[in-house]
Image (cartoon, rainbow, N blue to C red; front, side, top):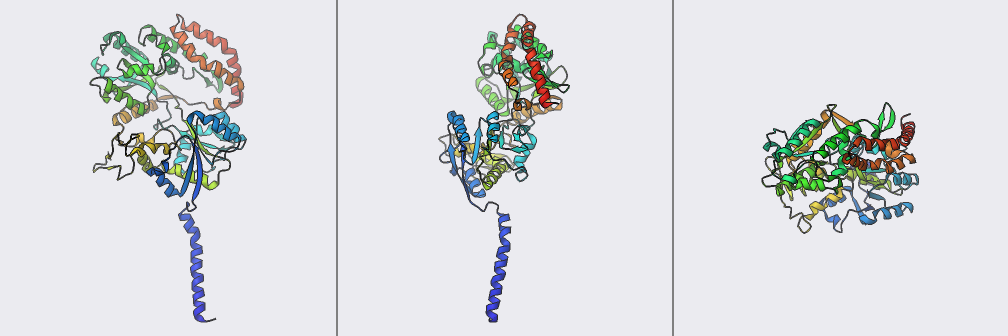
Length: 521
């Protein structure tokens, strides 16, 4: 063999050795080298979805293509059940209206593929799992078979967004120096409402409503939780379950609402209100205080609607009242954390699951949140010299007929992984008011947090197999709302309420004992 040939052979071998050695490194550098194609089962999508900038960027970055198996909302449940029972679901499921009992049944039947036990490769998704307790209720034998789509309507803490909004302009006109978020005891609130009725700052006469509830009497039981946080459920006291309705604070709540009703501080006949009737009165400028679901977006829409309906009204004329209870704390409940989910069919390939989780994790980064909030940076928006967000489009541009409609549409891609828009809380988002987001909503949540009596969701009650409990919940607990109304409008609230409690006390005690045995022993 010639020296020249030997040298050439050695050189080739060295090159091959280097190339072979580089293959693992190349794979490590690009974990998405393999192109994947799969189908997503969902109600969100459009024919031109793959043309949206954020979707195109995701497909290019993560090297995948996908088809949409689109289902109409009114046939979602039936279609999903059919596919689940026949083991025919597509690999990726962007789920809505998740039924817990069906989920557990389908897990047992092998319909779904478990998520990785170690989610550290997806830190943003893992952060949601660590923050929100609802993930625990979907865990089966230490495995998670679906990922709840978190409702991010309150990113500050896990508190419900039901609160009191008040007409700050009316308070000022009456001589009150109330802060944007004003703490009042119930007696102080009652005195204020009486003063509103006497002075009628809006000069509305019989049309004036000092205090309104979103849904009128249908929300009286919710308001009663300011006294008895478990009035409509079972509570845990001294490591035992008890029926919350039996707590004597229930009567304190009924008497308080009775006073409001008898003194005409509520809208006449509001116990017959349809949903949102109270909110509509407040938005029309007839109410001084509104108790209702007031997440940040709803708060902003409330201020803007009042500015349209009431001459001279500005957003700073809207305030929040923090109601301090008799024990000196703020009684708050846990927010509903989710109502949809995403997951994977049992036959889903590992690499498809890993890729889709990576996409979801990436969408939770601020850069992607900014993209589905504002569009493409440098084209649709940018920062000015002072660091403020400047948009290069108008509301007309992102309307269905506008040239930048994709900006509004892209939010449905985000909803494959999380409900509610994280963009609401982007610092300096020009679409949202700093006063509403910070001075009102966040300040209220932080005020509650400073001294809260927190009633977390008891997921044991949704996980129990006790059929008697479910029957009791359907027939008795769900009737608490109506019983509160009957008690308040009666001549003797205590008699009405005590009769209701006594009628069901024996049944409730048996269920409470069974729940204690199941979960607390």
